[in-house]
Image (cartoon, rainbow, N blue to C red; front, side):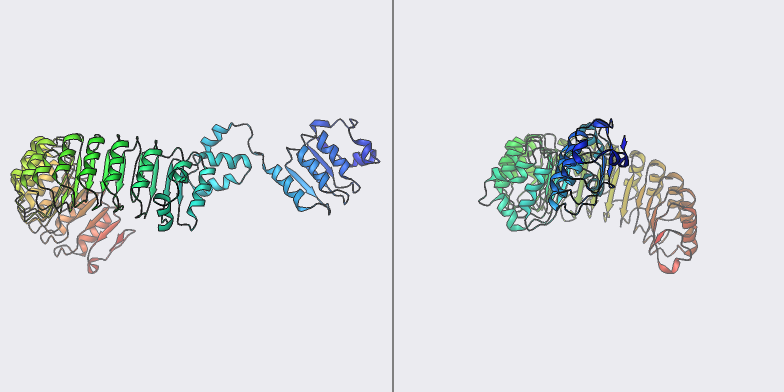
Length: 572
């Protein structure tokens, strides 16, 4: 209902004539009131407006006799006010501020949906900019946006403590916190300084914390790790570049925390019974700490160590207690020998005392092993028989990486191929003992193979690649760079047998010509990238054929002088 001020002015002779009047039949249903034509209106009239017209949504005033008092009557009484027009010279800032604050407190867009539903709607706003925009609509939306916020990232700040405390008060449902580039002094104060740990705002404030990432925090000490383990009961992932703790914790990375000692690991072993992944890099960690982890974290599946003071005793405990272990990576663990590897393993680097005996034991015992990587073992006595037990026992092996392993040849590769038929990724680089025979076995047995890398393996030629083409129809990536004996016959078979190929590297293959490349161009229409530098038998005509035929190609590496045609592809 709209009240016409001209009727109002004609009937009224003073403010008091209409206070409490019911002559106009407006009362509590009045929505809009315009008083701009009544220049003698005083605070007394506005007191009546605030008392009688609780449903008022729009108000216009023009009177020099209206002061703060009258406007405050309106502010307190007309709580649904949406529109206010004033030409009143005696209104002060404080009164305007109060009425504006009262007007901002209501959701003028949708006051029917319950808070729970609105919070769920706000969770679908994927960009922070959208959330911030929504929070400016009204007080209700501001509070609901805060409730919907589950992720926070805090950058470098000179007063990080105060900022964290402010955020914990505002966002009570946060589950994922990432803090980057802490000042060292602030971080040291948080974790190891005189400040009581029960006042630590990050731990006490975010009570629903499930994931915590603290980047570039080299001064994190045992005190901080223990306190997080005790207080963050819902924590599932902690990353100190990275780090993780709590009874529900599944992943813990301490790669960048080189001051961590056995005390921290004892806390992890005691509190983190559900831990599945652990990464350590500290010269202060000894057998005592790793023993505590092995005995307490029996669900461990992945363990990465770069700890020079860990010996066989600790690793034997891991093998005895962590029966679900699937991946073990050892870096610069100079005190480890074959003795420690009877029930664990994947990924060995810089461990010069480990030999074929240890690998053989792993193959017999680690039946759930899914990946194996052997790098730079050309000086060790690692021969074919070391891989035979992998083929027999590791039926779930899906990834095999052999780099610079001159003692491994066709016999060992055939054993892997015949036993590990679930193999999907095979990388063989600079292994001169591998030839066509081993690759043929892979093609005949590993039907699920999707990725194959054969670099600098002089014994592999057309016969091996033909077998791969005929037996591995799901192959999507092939790198045969440096195969001097591979020619057009292999490429023809590859084009016919592997139509799903998306990535191809044939650099430094002198026998591959335009003819072989034409089979790829004709049949591998999903090809997205091709690297064929230093292939003297491929000319600009072959390059042009490939680009015009393969419409999905995005990246092509070839010598400049061979380029005569270029579509939208990125050509280098």
